Length: 257
Image (cartoon, rainbow, N blue to C red; front, side, top):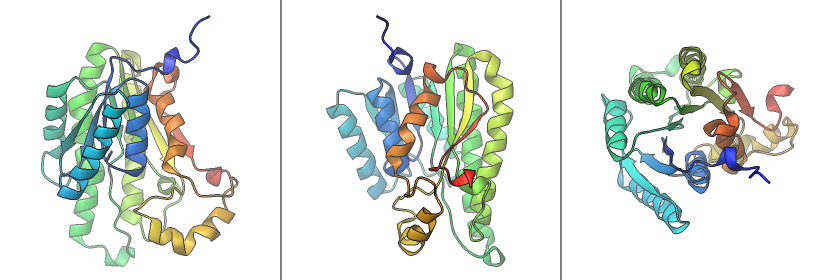
């Protein structure tokens, strides 16, 4: 009998997961490692993030996998270029999961140039640099997977997240663009859009709004990072080889109502 899970296995593949030191990024990195991929764990480079990333690497190693941590502040000029070069020197990247992003909630009338520029740098400029550096080599090798982590905000923007929501909408546009360009070369490009996921970043907001929000979600609860890993593995493996240019909501049905 053939192995029904063979198409999900990632032995011999290398994945770069940005923002992988905790929460959604960590959960995705761990499922890819569990499927056999060598995983580059990106973090922003400060001591706290470096310690968290080291813990992820240690956990993957303890499970018999292979991983290495890479620090890079995405707000810096040429951050994507530097990260792509560092990881590629370790191993050619077959799977790129673009999870790292920042959101600075504030009324749109109060948005400063500094806050605007920082969100654009982290959420878009560095993303573009990574795509420019890593997708063409995937196409040359005839196999690649790109998964961007979007948000329900890309279609249902919160009034206080105008810049963040706008970057997620732009990211989805890039997914559609690249899917058309590289789909015939063995590379798939898709967007995985979480709904209301309980993370450290939004914990305070969820304390105030979580119950009311959960009542509007058909699943009846907030999501967790682990709710995303099945979809991520599908899109990063041969099991999802005919899925390209798609936006997949993992939101408990929130966008259906």
